[in-house]
Length: 132
Image (cartoon, rainbow, N blue to C red; front, side, top):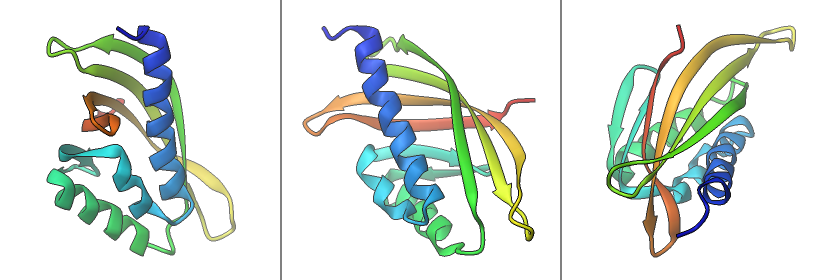
């Protein structure tokens, strides 16, 4: 079995990659990091399956006037009872205002659950809630 922290680092890279795509206006590129039956929670809504996740990413990509920076901190790695890998993080979301200044608009407590697939370890669920 792969070392928990080595695997956790690879999975954390996937989390960073899809947020990187969102922040650069190419959110739909991030779909490659999710399983076909993924569950994704964001902005108080729940999206299910690849089509649901893609719907969120497509809508986000269409928001060309919304410029964000996601700062992903404090990853914590653990194993789920089913052998999945759980990656807990705090995500600080900054939004650019009309003057070009970024202000943190929210802090989100997330848990990404990764499962091993023939395409590598992919995100099976992303659950989130406000930090406070």
